[in-house]
Image (cartoon, rainbow, N blue to C red):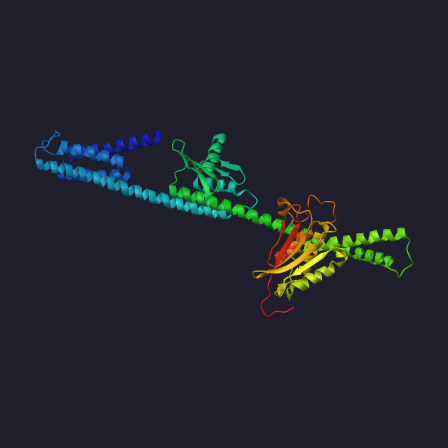
Amino acid sequence: MVQKSVRLAGRVVAALAIVAALTFLSFRLAPVNEITAGFLYLVAILLIATAGGLVESTLASIVAMLCFNYFFLPPIGTLTISDPRNWVALFAFLATSLTASQLSARAKRRTREAVERQNEIERLYSLSRALLLTEAARPIAKQIVEQVAQVFEFPAVALYDRGSGEIYRAGFDDLPAIDAELREAAVRSQLFRDENSALIVTPIRLGRQPMGSLAVRGASLSDAALQSLVNLAAIWLERALSEEAVNRAEVARRSDELKSTLLDAIAHEFKTPLTSIKAVTSDLLSDSVSPLEQRQRELISIADEGADRLSTLVTQAIQLARIEGGKFQLSRGVHLPSSLISAALRQMKALTDGREITVSIAGELPLVSVDAELVQMVIAHLIDNALKYSPRGAPISVGAQVSGDLVVIDVTDRGAGITEEEQSRIFDKFYRGTKERNLKGTGMGLAIAREIIRAHGQEIWVRSKPGEGSEFSFSLPLAPRGGAE
């Protein structure tokens, strides 16, 4: 501020010195008449306005008017004017000189502003090009700070990335103070400007989303350039967040693919010895071999049941691995809902013997377009779930009816029911109810059922209240008209 005042005072003194020198030259060294003198004064004022500014040219105009009156308008040597016409000439000279100085100063200011805007545009363009070459291995916020300081030649730049909570700086010494200003600007979304220290702290926003804040010291940016700079920073911070999310998703996808591939391979390796064990236990338990003692039969029966259970677990693991690994494809066909339910019940016959299973199917159900094997698997999972979580003497019902342009199949039990909190997690992988953890199972059945139904573009849901049992339902799409099983 002091330096600006000193420079302005120097320009004012120089302007007045030019007027004084011109007066001495025109009055003493090479005397001229008042018309020539007035013309020379106007030319001098125009030159002063062009080289300096409005303040210098205005003061020079007033001093030139006084000199013109004193040295060239009669009576000479006084500030009075005898001829009234000279008053008109004097004020015309003053008005002309002031107008000319203002127009010249305005033109100069606009030229300077145009040059500054052009420089700002070129720097913003250079910054955008530099940001295109950012390194993926380094934080984008840190690279923004470095590039802004380099391109705009700011002595100090700092950026607060709200996403990571980090502050990146270049050139700031008063770290606690600037950190507080940056965090406050990001929270309040308000621009802070300190003319004394030439400090600007502005929030960074993309739409309505606050992303952080930017501080620059020693800046002489226009409001438009500052806003463009902030927008560039917001765009690149958002791009960095998007790339990070994509990278995380890709890593997660590859991890799931690897996990699914390994699980599939291990599960298939289990299949071969399990088949051999099952063949041996079945042969030993059959009547075609020599009779077994009661103790031997009991032990072999335990091994046979264990082989069946382990085979079921391996089969579910393979199914889940294929679903998660993206190897899950539908083989759609046109089927009757009743035939799907009947086939599932036949599969579950060994487990449903001795249990009351009620089937309620609405008449004249339309055909559905589904993968029959997979839908039968869903029904079997739901029936198996109902058998596990309801008392042995309680009935289980399976039904099917039309709902709009869908067929809805439901399996209802009279078990203990499911709380609302557990209903939101019941279809998660490996989740089992908190009250029945002693029951056999892996927690994969309902997760597999949900993925199969979603693959058909439909939904599966549960309605339940503690003490009143549970009803699991899922929808199936209708087949196009004219189809047949």
